[in-house]
Length: 446
Image (cartoon, rainbow, N blue to C red):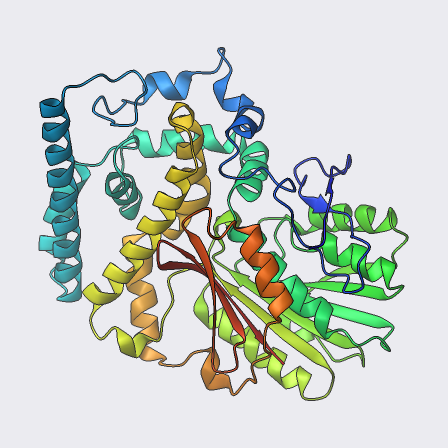
């Protein structure tokens, strides 16, 4: 198994997960158990979340009400009878919120908005940012005027860079998606081509590309990365990311070009093209419209007719063919199960004394995907457009056994509740599961 070494790049302090390239014929990086701050390495949490544990900065802990009945509290001492009562109360709370949530979905599905509003108010009385999984999930489902939710967001944003770094390194969602896509791209690039062109649907912080930059430098190829300019993207993040990528490439002597273009401006330049699309991967903390995704895939297919290339697609949102969900409650329940599993996978990876860190990360990176109105809109749009990536007539490219084995080691399969499966008609899809629930899918086409 290849060994990689964690590289801290001084000009890019929030991205400490960049790796040097191992001396191996495949040139595809793998990850050893010491490459990242693993979710079960408790000693690493103290360093990553020092910003949350300083004695001088405990406002979040003091101002947000805590759940006095939390069973994970290390100082809680109870008798067996008290334990039984606590578990019964917890089960009753879960069942009550679950029933209310499904009743809300039923009302919305029947367009009974008044009834849905009443149920929503009942749910709001039961939520708690430090409560059980469903309580925290329900807190983010509905728009609210309370100060508590906005306070959590503002306090978390103050520490965004540290939270982003910690989230990416501790949890496998982003690393799984990026490693799988990058491995497929690097395997597909022919030896004889001199230039590679990556078209990235949502480049964001650029966290996917340092490994590819290193490989392209070692292979002595030129690289162009084009970020797709989306009509609703006003983040202004591109210029900062471009600077980081160029500086990083310069340290390896790579001829790198970084540009931003609208989808209709992208043309075939007789080079190997890789179209990369990541949507809703938790570390991204943002979602995109499915219509934008499908348009990107259509353009990619059209351009690949005339040149060699590959399409990689990572999906961290709840997704399935809409014909499998004829009613909104069934679609709502699927989303609920998906994000509940995501919350639980995060919670299992946090020691109890870092509750503030977990709440901050849930607020920044998971809450943006949890919205009752956006789920309804997504279902309605899906019912009007019953098509998926499979309907584009793309040919799946089988993921390699080497990549599968390495990504299983990355997520510590067998030592955790994470598991990686290979799916697809041509075994072109890898799926990261937690306790049997799919969290992230990465598909490869050519």
